[in-house]
Length: 429
Image 1 (spheres, rainbow, N blue to C red):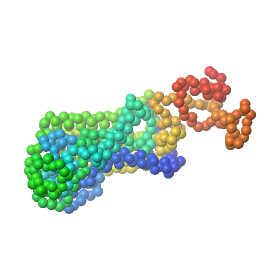
Image 2 (cartoon, one colour):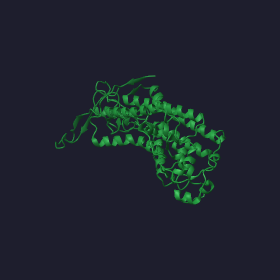
Image 3 (cartoon, rainbow, N blue to C red):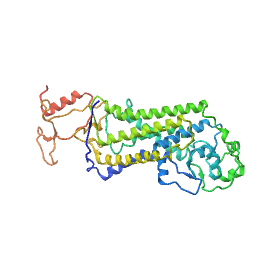
Image 4 (cartoon, rainbow, N blue to C red):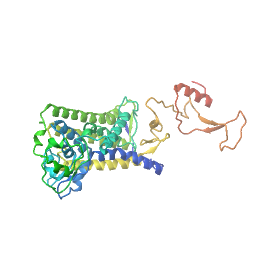
């Protein structure tokens, strides 16, 4: 177990404005996609509004992941799944008593409902389908780049400001379980419109988009909602809860292996930059808390689509702590990020690695040391003049000192060495 810790270095002073815009776009894209796809606008069924510290918890990745798993559990246990069930299961209800995502809200919030989805399932052409596609592609990108054994595995690479939120997409893959029953096509008003009698068996047969007017016309009754869900002890509910716990364990294990175990126990000493270290700490804390909290509530049989601890002071403190860590991580990454010779970005200093971020897994580095007996000199020859205007005899050439990095592809590193020795007129050893 060997690793080195690099001190904080300011290396971003030579990055252009155009590169900064690209970097920040790539930086924030996974974070914003995860948050805005998993945290819909609240549905207010009272005249009061939540304070900022009540709302901020919905942007916590733990809250978003719990919502996905709770929607799946409710759908699996439903004897009958209607647009009303789908709307209430996706809504974040704010009541006079605070947040409420219980099954009883399907009944209680029905008098506030003014708009329902057309079908009790995902529409292929919809915003939710687009969100699912984006989060899935980002999750596949994470697996392609960071899971050992995949074709695009980056190996021992270093985070920069453009990649610090890429691992967040791993948790976004859990959305696939609930994708078929996620929707934003509903609306609830803060004031009750009328007491509506809803007959859910007739509601299922609606072939058009439901609205408050259509609910009144068909006189549907909500009193039959409660027995429409199977008990938590049923096999289907237990199976989906076990599957959710397995997925949580997999996400936690993936983060620990990719960002802690592999760098720490690799054959070559890993160089931790401050960006690398903070990124590893952030994902370890977030994944561990998500695994612990969600597993605890899953094992205790909670069915709320809003995580039960959302109003607890400790959960608010945890959420604010994550937000502070994110801000610090972005600032540190902006300070340490630098551009390497091939145009990619890294946080490690040139003293430790310059061409490493440009290499594929099977690449080989051939170092040219001026003090080496084997390769004591190396340069570049030009047939034209240094300024492009001088003329030379046929046998003449300009010899230019080489002090940078040469990137190329060779099938046999020995051929490269022989070419360098011949060019520099160095005898073979």
